[in-house]
Amino acid sequence: MTLHLYDTATRAVRELRPRVDGVVSIYLCGATVQAPPHIGHVRGSVDFDILHRWLLRTGHAVIFCRNVTDIEDKVIAKAAQEGVPAWLVAARNERAFSQAYETLGCLPPTVEPRATGHIPEMVALIERLIAAGHAYASGGDVYFDVASWPPYGRLSGQRPDNVQPADDADTDERKRDPRDFTLWKAAKPGEPSWPTEWGTGRPGWHIECSAMAERYLGPAFDIHGGGMDLMFPHHENEIAQSNAAGNDFAAYWMHNGLVTTAGEKMSKSLGNSLLVSEVLASMRPVELRYYLAAPHYRSMIEASDEAMLEATSAYRRLEGFVDRATELVGDVDPADGVLCADFAAAMDDDLGVPRALAAIHEVVRDGNRALAAGEKDAVRGAVTSVRAMLDVLGLDPRDPRWGGGADADLTGVIDGLVRLALEARQAARARKDYAAADAIRDQLTAAGVVVEDTPHGPRWSLRQ
Image (cartoon, rainbow, N blue to C red; front, side):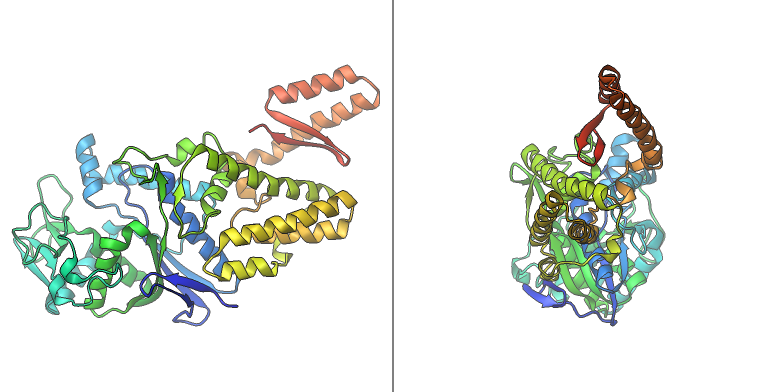
């Protein structure tokens, strides 16, 4: 079976047929960096990272472009509120997003362009739209003429006559039609601006992604992704302006579900967001990744402590098997692992991660039975397969990235020191000095190290 993906534009699951054989090009709408990331922001990044990893595992090359929106109304408003330049707000929060992506184990994109670095491309695209009769300048602004493009609304399933007025301008007086959306905004005092033939100003939000996608992926590429909240108006407007300018644009549209709290979209403006940094105070990065990755990417996630605890427990069952198996058979290379048929079929069926995880848990059950029976060959096969499948999902417990984030380089040192203490404890027990052995264990416990005695010797972990 080959990979099939749900295409929002056609409302159907379609076989992925890249424009260039063996190479998949992806554009993902990245962060608008007016604030630090909450878990709703990074949910899509984790989902598309899994797509990236599955494509690599199945032999594809991937060109992955994820943009940074560093000039936009929200960034400018935040800067005005703080009394600082817009670039300072953008730079600070871009670093926070980059750290969150890395902390959650996302592979780096091929390119991560900033909107402010591509103003010439945006101006050139607007000029093409004006020349083609699909855009017009008015009072220093430039607008896309929605009435000039009859296919408008097809992505979101709306008829052009029913489309609500665009609310991306201070006034509609300069527009021919309230539905027309802004391509270029005339400068206001104190705002970032660039000179053009229409006057000094800055780009509208939608033109940014069209210009950057064309710059790095060309006029036609494979997959455009983002959250379902971007379907309208952002993605609808991208399609309209790109197609009207003569570009085929994206062949497939993928939209991930949102993270909600009490049924509402997680949003800074609503005051219901859970910052990534806050959530990571109570769970490990790999456990948060499991929590975000485990539901199907198109489903909604209702954020709750109970759901996070369930995800943590489920991941630790997988991790526990990998640890116990590794103690018995030694380290293995997940690249040698065989992906079970159910796992591969689930991933090829629109990235069916819930079914894929069910397949992994089934192999773990078999592996635990082999562990209980002391069947080393069967254990080795199971743990190699489990690690291979978890690696596709970015969840391999033995991956060095999960060794402690910024303190990963200390993992080996800590392991060595703890093992020295455990060897001293074992020596004390051998000479029947149980008081000394218990004292060592108590000191380790006080330091946050949990010791578990197993038939294969003591195993330690950090208290969570």
